[in-house]
Image (cartoon, rainbow, N blue to C red; front, side):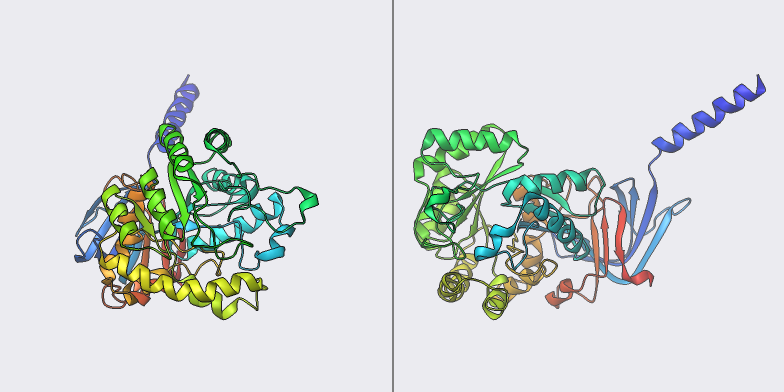
Length: 424
């Protein structure tokens, strides 16, 4: 009888232990509030399980794991809303035809870890063949591999011969990308099909692109009616829509149609800016990649048609997007990582400051603004009780020197330490 009672006590203790979340206290020398720009000193962030429970000058450390960051500035984990984790810089032109779904998934597993260790604890992956980003997201969520929280799109929607179609093979192959659809009925079906296979967000190619063959970045591709149909179905089914759009007309049409974000926006003009502000459409600029690509395009085997277009588009984009910033368009940080190496994502913050944002405004694009665009403001984007314990730490003061965010030394995702150079 005594043995049975003891067994019951042990069992109950084990159950209670399993239900009691682990407690961690992060002692931050400096803690940045990204809403206000206020920096508080010597703060204790108390974490239970994967969530923040309290923040204050004194934390109860009894029975807790304590992480000391006395000389660091602690910020919320960064968010990149335009990545391609399953691609690499070399996957351009004919080289992309060597990819398989299995290869993309393996590439994605490596890049997910690199991106997480660079301080990006959440990403939106907007475009991957074979639904490889859906598989990657699920593997991360299952704890099988390290990586950021992912909102994943699967294949992007495109018109026949558009930016997101496969235009490289000879006509006799009759090759077409999975996301191709023409006409209102066809795009409705394609949205539903992509959601069927697990997409969190719908990516569409509203205009031509830079690295695609045979199209013009300025030219609209989907019609306004097609885009309205895409958005209506996606929103009704609880998914947001991201529109690749370089040309001014395509940007304006996409905003009128109700998309949630414009990706790139290179030829944005005052009419498009006015429409985006009226509709609350986010701009996702992807600027950092420009200089890197032009400096490395030949080395990575980029096709001449892509290089020629980039030489025209990149300088114009900087000028036009700077005007958009000054005009008050909402901005969320996106990088197009894969056009340049993954892990350099924080360079985007630096470019925004170069184009006139304050360091705080720049940081907000990759924290609270990006969380709002994702629809995740209740869980990420700021260091607050109730949100996931997604934290990064850097030396120095990013409000004085934004380049400090390019050298993240500590990363925590959901209360688990993913990188800690301060412990060495």
